[in-house]
Length: 314
Image 1 (cartoon, rainbow, N blue to C red):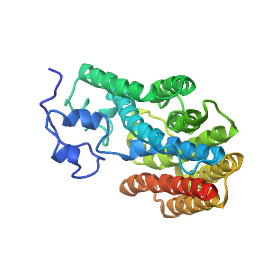
Image 2 (cartoon, rainbow, N blue to C red; image 1 turned 120 degrees about the vertical axis):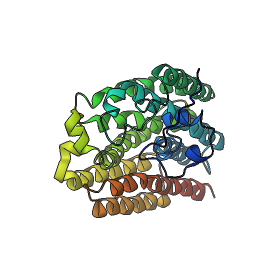
Image 3 (tube, one colour; image 1 turned 45 degrees about the vertical axis):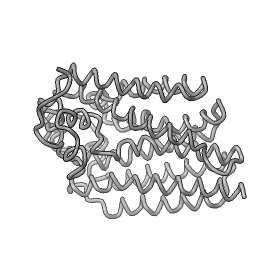
Image 4 (cartoon, rainbow, N blue to C red; image 1 turned 180 degrees about the vertical axis):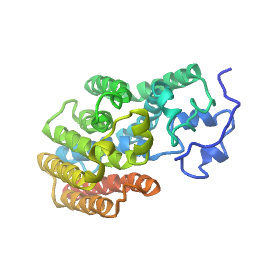
């Protein structure tokens, strides 16, 4: 039977009392947990590069705001493909997840769903993502398909390199290309700089996230930048976030952005600096809160880009 009837409770790091765990029918809860619906920060982090790119494209194209239809499509696509990616990750990592305190409560190692059920659910989410992708021009469709390579290899990187966060950045920052391509049917240097900046940002925030698991990761042999940087995490974050901010500024300049965009980037620097100052790498709960705070950072940059497009249009 496809629908699960077993519910062993919420995943350890889920948002407490989320509607997934309180209102959704019991049979559907494991699938919602596979897709991380009760942890929405993931799809926000996947979505923001798309929205930033769409906003920069609006600036470059002289439009007053990003294409609203594109923003909606990116939102639906981000939820679907983040869910599909997480389901794929859980299928690949089930043996590791069963050995780590924070992840052993995930649906597959907890016995809430089988691998076959998870694979079927992953396929359904991919079909939703494909339906969204096909709404764009042919160049954007091909670009979206190309992103699957980064998605496919990411779960395996923690076994071979200290830089799995780099490969997560390759996948999660891909939207920096998509928003621009959806508007123009091509790419230029602005989305390239936005993409590389997004990779640096991703390495930074996911390093903070990975500090939750560093002891268990060491025991099971999982590699991460959290383990690599160790006590040098704060200097590493300064370098990564500074580079990300500089690259975002370069992308804005290449898109012919005005002052509002750079004010947004500067406000974002303040937020990232706050993360670094207050970070305690040995406090797992705080690491999770700081990781989630990157949703605020995403909104700051997006607001600056949208404001700039609107001001220039007036």
